[in-house]
Image (tube, rainbow, N blue to C red):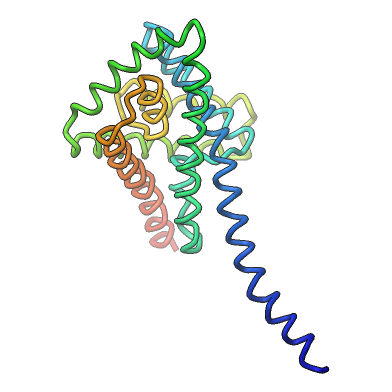
Length: 232
């Protein structure tokens, strides 16, 4: 029976790549859930204060936690796409869905608390402003956020800086996009869910903002790649 080992090897060769891909998708989705929760924690803090400067500072706590614990945030990972295989696109999609699940979970938890009504009311005002905005405007504001997110993530990767300095480097770009009114697709997920306003129009807003975030991040990453090539 000389062919049996060959058949077993052939089956294993077919199953292993499929399992690895499946595992990558599951890992991206599961890692995306706590990232969505962290962004929601920051978003809730942002809505809880009337001082926009303090709110922008508090919002950055979510991204600091994501970077520290290596959770999977779509807006943080999409700018790192260069050099990845084509399957990474599906990982990003799974990550995005995981982020949505995380924001859904935290928004649901808040809804049953004493602070839920206040946050929901403020989120409703934000949600209305987003669904009323022209789609090209949302795309451009999303691109601005994508640029800031790329800066925050790449700055945080400088191992030569101490942890406290890393925190400053992450906080500054996040505060910039918060104060500038740029659109962050995962934060918007939380705002729509907290306001109980995630309908078809809101979902379209999320998709446009996601495209803007993607464009902004890839624009920065692409220019770095071009400059790196030219400097050779």
